[in-house]
Image 1: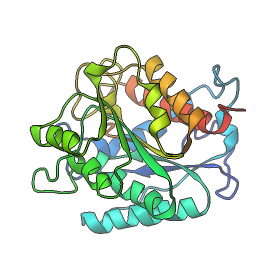
Image 2: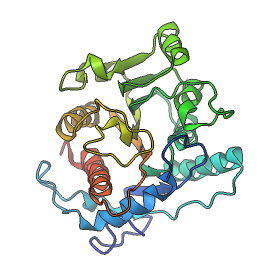
Image 3: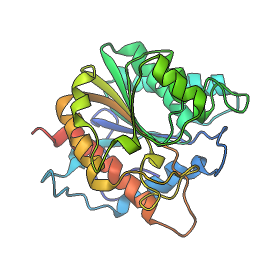
Image 4: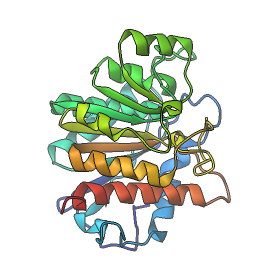
Length: 283
């Protein structure tokens, strides 16, 4: 399955500016499961998108979109993560804009590790209902609940937005390390665009779909009430892509619901929007 399969020209890898990387890894989901099926569901929904973006007055697919085959995971987490990092590193060296589709949130660590090894002057923006800063969870340091703790070991340059669920350990870490964490209750109908200026020039963006309100995207393992909606999120993302060089994106924790098509269509539309913002926003 390809992103926008049958609706756009089949760009060769060499001619594509965008590479879609499905990452159907699921090992540590702790409540609702099914993120292993997330990439295929989103890819299957994508051909039903309209190709013209009314906001950008452009067809973002013209940046050239190539969909990679999904890695086949063997079951040993560190080896699987090493493969993810290797794949992402190759795509980066070929100067591709990588949009990865999870899978559980833990995959953001090996994905970001590739960017961290290959780029300087780099921040991470996390849109998420959960802090994901536990040192270990259910006997795994690679749990989806620990992904930002692992990334924090690589860089302190993290901006967390939309958090509304965390444990006492995570709250203490945020205070002790003076992390830039903006809780959902601290925002009213908008996200803090003023914090974009505190970021490095290059930005890696990780979006856990539970950042959104469950009424918009219920198809995730641990939905949290009080989330964010479409227009306010796009306003923030427009500002982010306009002000900074977003060098890679992952969208994770999508778990499809049988017979309910709206959530995967929404996530596919979000991905297409991000491609548009990357290549056509400032034209």
